[in-house]
Length: 140
Image 1 (tube, helix red, strand yellow):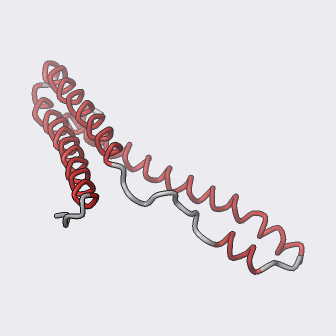
Image 2 (cartoon, helix red, strand yellow; image 1 turned 90 degrees about the horizontal axis):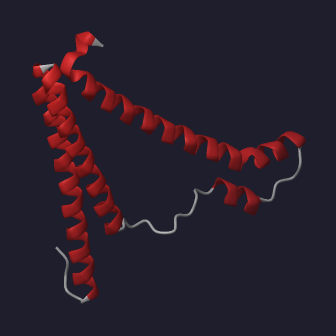
Image 3 (spheres, rainbow, N blue to C red; image 1 turned 45 degrees about the vertical axis):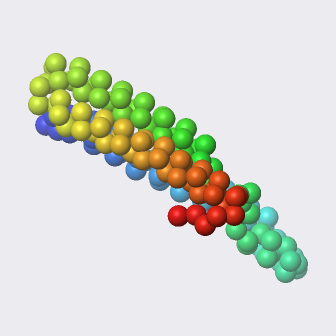
């Protein structure tokens, strides 16, 4: 870990993001396998299959609402800003131990704060657009 020096935090962050993404993909795959297990068992036993049942099992899961809730963006933005501030504080303490680590880790914290601010701005834009559409004016 010593040879990575100030980049260890960044490497750990991206490794976490990669693991989280792969875990989501695996979870979706396992859910799909569970849904298709009865269909596979019926085929293996040679039972006749109702086309409507096959169609329903093969269809993607219906989603309640495909729109993004601005409140969720605000919450994500607040959490991301808090994480960025935490990383910036971590940068200070790492800088006391390893001065060359201060600016790279501080940069990661500032980037996280910028992402959080962007999420909050996006939520505001979505709320204004929804409000203007509700009043009958064109959005944008």
